[in-house]
Length: 415
Image 1 (tube, rainbow, N blue to C red):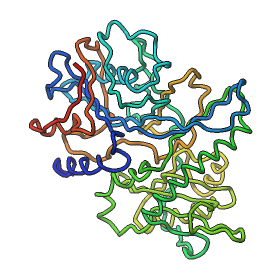
Image 2 (cartoon, one colour; image 1 turned 30 degrees about the vertical axis):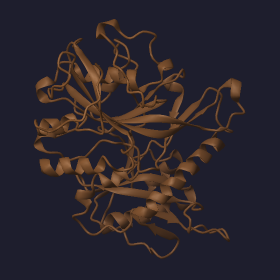
Image 3 (cartoon, rainbow, N blue to C red; image 1 turned 45 degrees about the vertical axis):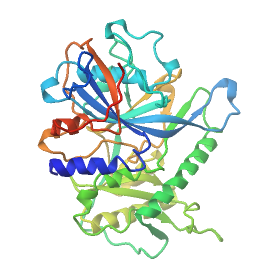
Image 4 (cartoon, one colour; image 1 turned 180 degrees about the vertical axis):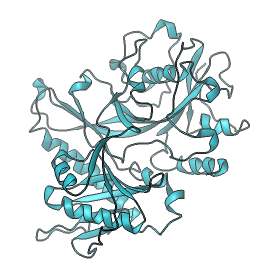
C-alpha cells in the first residue's frame, strides 16, 4: 500500500459508523513546553464501543438484567523509532486510564511524579472496561494508572482454532439448509445479535455463581463491519466476494430466516492475506449444526483461495468436534486479547464473553515502510515528567503526521 493510499483509506474509514460521531479519538504524548509541535513521542487510538455487563453479587442474586455500558477498544499504539526505548509509550498508556476509566476505579490521587493530570474532554464517556490486542506479549499488563508496574491490561483467552483447507475439502449443497448473507445482510444480522447476546447474558445469570461478573462488546453499529472494511483493498483484488455470512434455516414449523432473528446457527467472516485465511468474526452454533457449518466455511475458504480457517475462542463444547475434523487449538503469539476492568471486582473474577474477531480495531496488517507494524513497542527507560497527553478529535494521527510534516492537524488540547 502506498503512503497516499494508506492515508486516503484511513480518512474514508474515519467517517464509517464504527468511528464517526466522536467514537474515534487519537491521542498523542507531547512535550508540555511545546504542545503544538508535530514531534509527538507516541500515539494511540481509542474507539468508543457499546458493551454489556452482568454482575452476580450476593446482594442482587435476582438481578438478571445485563447493563449496557460504555467501553473502549484501543488500537495503533505507535512510537517513532527515534523516540523508542525511553518509556514514552508506557507513560502514555498509564495516562490513558486517567481519561478513559471510571473515576471510582482510579487511585485516590494522581501520581505526583507525573506532574499535572491530563484534562479529559467533557464529551468523553467513562469506560467500564477497555481492551487491546497486543503484539508485544504481556507488556501492557505493566501499564497501570500508578507508578507500579502492574494493574494494566490482562491477557485473556488468546486462543485460536485453525484448520488447513485442503484439496480434499468438497463443495457443499449451498441450496439446502443455509442462507447466504450479503454485506448488508450481515450488518442487519449483527444488529439482531446485539439483542440476542443481551438475552443470552440474561439467561446465563440463572446458572452463574454469586461473585461472578461478565462483560462483552457488542458487534452491531459497524463494529463487526470494520473487519471487512479495513481489508477491502486486499480482498477486492481477487475473485468477487458476494457473501460475508451464512445462517442456518430453522427446521421448526412457521420459523424463517426472512428477518434473520430466528436462526439456530450463523457465522460471519473476513479474509486475511498475510497467510490466506478465512477468519470467522462471529459464530453461533450448537453441537447439532457445527459440523455442517464448518463444511460451509470450508466451501467459502476454498472458493476464494484461502489456505486456512481461523476461529477465535471456539466454545468449549465444540473443541473436541473441531479436533475430530482436523482443527488445531493454539495460543496466539500476536494479537493477544487483553482487557482492563474498571470496577471493584478483581480481574480473576471477571469473564470476557464473546472474545471473538469482531472486536479488534488494529488497523491493517500491511503498512508502508514508514509504519511497518502497529502495536510494536520495544521501549524501556525513565519516563519524562515534562510530557502530557492531548487528544485529536477524528484527526490526523501520529502516523499521518509522520508521513507528512505539513499535514494540517485539528487539535483540541489542554493548556
